Image (cartoon, rainbow, N blue to C red):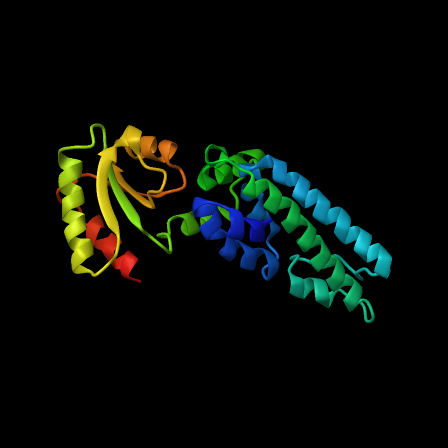
Length: 240
């Protein structure tokens, strides 16, 4: 499922998926994929299909473990595999992964943009359902706070799309040009945010509205469009 998000997902879910794959497969922290399913609950069918396929494969090879692997990483799984069962266990793991990837890919490729949910919101929902703070919530939040790898458009947004936001866009545009970055910087009214905006910069009082309008973009909240230290911080992050 995480691999499907990596290839066919959108926004922060797509960008954070590679890190989640490593945490899940090598670290054995399976909780990391819960928010991704909560964003599109129909993906539970992909998890179920993978589970059934994996168990069926284990049955065919008559393979199993000597004890429960904890944490459930691939290393712990192999450590609990008795001699002579490695082929069957690995076959079950990869068959399950392939089937769940295939099913999840179908749902993700057919998803509409307005069906995508904010990863942060899904993580908060997971914590509410569990009734306690999640250990992976901080990891996902850190992933979400990372600037997108490929930024092509930065949009300043305010109520009217003119005035101070236009001046802020002009200031950042000059900084982008001086840094030698090939990034478009423009401004617009918050109700007309373009869907292809990679980074959205708004006044702190409007950030929540901007996130509701474009949840998959990277959002920067400032107190003053005309003078903000976050512009230089953003340029440094974009240059990395």
